[in-house]
Length: 357
Image (cartoon, rainbow, N blue to C red; front, top):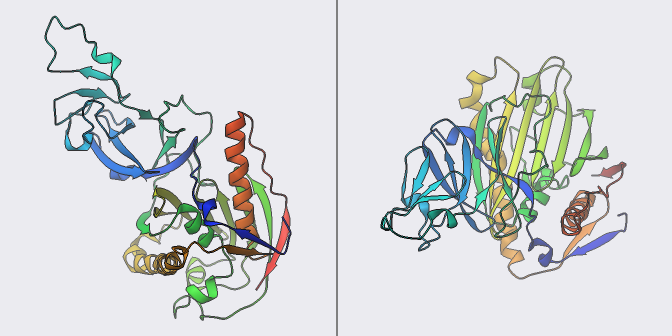
């Protein structure tokens, strides 16, 4: 873990974790009797919500002729294929094949669409992606939650982005402490290229690691708006989840980033905001462009990096500033190995202090 440098091949980007929860979409994007098509891990997914509000997810392909089901109709309880009218309930079971005659011995129930476990919490829909082409039982693994907020809490704001890179590439960017002075320079944030030494304590946490809660020695304008004596904690969790929580004397502001791989070359980033400041809501129209530009700065640098990665260069991770990336790869490999061996996940990361400039 503490070797001076580690070389990472782009082949390390190649595998997505399975048997784990990925962010699907904001709850508000899916009203009752609606469905929405997405691609996750290269698989076509159809999210739907029944007339009684129950969310579900199916493989977005009819098993008859392979047409995407989102071209069909949804009456609130069953998805109807546009090609031959086959009907599927929220569990993926075929309930009707209109072309069958009354004396046919074909049972529609023997046909079906792969369904995925879905859970809803804190205004988000999470989808469990099992090993490919396998029907998953209800997972024992809990969905990621933002600490300090109830399961029924709704987001105050949501923004979406498409990054031109692999999930690993994008996630490492958001745990990289050394890029901030060069990528995020702006008059409203910080002076570009200004360096100072930092030391932070990191602890293992469920399926990842956490930068321990600490007081902020240097405040941005955003922290001055929040007021009080701010402290911050940052959680990094598989498969691509970053939770930054800012605590003041009386209130909490949380910035959740979720990464959902579309395929090996595109990753959807959803930034979700929660807060307890009653006066912050009217400022959303003013603050939203600044928050979006902050993420867009990351997006632009990742896009430029992708140009270089097209040549498949070896990547060097050095001590201290890149240790978080090293931990991520170790934790990811351990999770995949634990699933393969059918055993409990054991976090390989130990508490330690990192220093960098």
